[in-house]
Structures are given as C-alpha cells and as structure tokens.
Image (cartoon, rainbow, N blue to C red; front, side, top):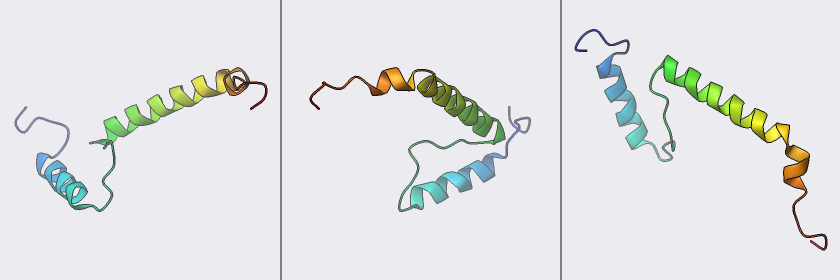
Length: 65
C-alpha cells in the first residue's frame, strides 16, 4: 500500500521506538485510531460479559472460604 495506507509509517516507527524505550511498555498497543476503536469495542464487550453474570461468577467459592 506504499503511500496509500491510512497511517503514516514514519509516525508508527517513531511511536514504536518510544514504546521500546519506555520503562513500562504496554502489553498491547493500538496502532491507529481504527485500532483504538477496536480495543474500545472489545473492552466494552468483555465488560458487558462480566456484568451479565457477575453474581453467579462471584459466588463460586467454597462455603467455608
């Protein structure tokens, strides 16, 4: 896609260098606004799943625990 991609490869390279030099680089990095949107949608779906059965999920310990 040389020159036709949505993002700037030089900016991505700079971002990756900054992350590599970071004392605490992230486990995952959303490279681009579209990727941020995907992250947010996935996070919402996971939160909705956790909330849907929170009480049932949270009550699985032994009775004497």
